[in-house]
Length: 119
Image: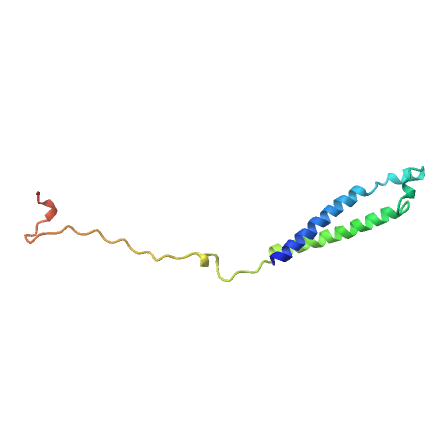
């Protein structure tokens, strides 16, 4: 389960970085007007509108991957396998031994307490 979680996290981070990069590469809506006046965008590798379609579709695919990995991470975080037993089963219980009672003062044959006789 830990390996699957690690793989999903790696794919999630790569998708997030890919989305960031692709969004930064795309031109805004106002950039198409510059291509009409010869700014050089029409001579690009994908043509005037081909790069916008390629980048937007790739961004949409990465956004879908990001969304699915987010759902996967949510599922993996909430559905962990349950351990058998309770929380307190792992705690070692020690038997409590009562403390010994204090010894009674010793008495001699006459019945007097030996601790009261001065020496």
